Length: 294
Ligand code: PDD
Image (cartoon, rainbow, N blue to C red; front, top):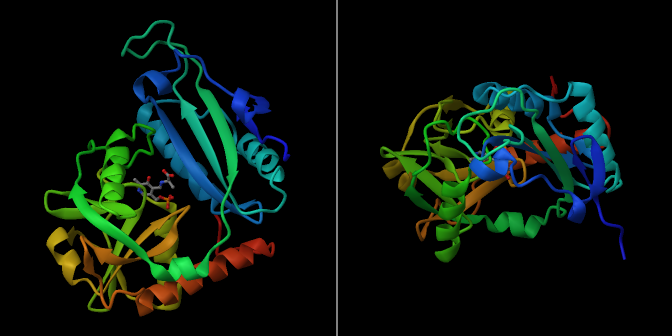
């Protein structure tokens, strides 16, 4: 039997099944916490500085100090990822506001954040499956107005994903005031008249690390792109639709609300972007840089 993976909890490494936080943890009681999911290819964390910058941004927004230095975070990632010896994996970290002496919405003075982190293997890329694309539905975006904070308060996302699953779809695109914003756990791109479009940064969507990389790769490769709002009604006419995330990478949407997107297979621009993305990962795996990682 393989040995159980260790998780990090407030400075200690414990078997995952024994790692826990107190019931008065405010992340548990109020969803008062933020998180990151960092892919590590060949055990090497991908775009890690970007993830740590976004963590700082989320922590600043909720007024929690970052409990670890950059070096300390790297040490945690190294120790966790070493357990899976060069495998692809996803590293999860969560910082909660800490333990409340009593359950009360008021933020107590002087409490220390709790930190947990663990890793899990990422299944190797299954090209045949990737080329099948994914199916999505559109749903009303019932989330709050600070979706730019990577908070663990994800009940609306979980409910939307459950609805998608019920309808035989892989993901839901969330629509607010007639505009398509993002997926339940992914960012949105469409190709319209050859132009690659993603909704602009705002309080209503997460500034995705994969989304930024896709925009950088588009710029490097001369693909025309824009950040612009996407009318949900226009989705039905898009040449291509993609959803991006650290774990899904760049996924091609082949069906929207039961109707085929384009010719019902991943489109030509997706093929080009997927190749750029995979090449980027390979360079990292071989010890080089994807692009700049700063
Ligand atoms: N989710 N939008 C939402 C709401 C997300 O939860 C995520 C990622 C993204 C994509 O962000 P990134 O490219 O930085 O992964 C966009 C992670 C993977 C998760 O919750 O598991």
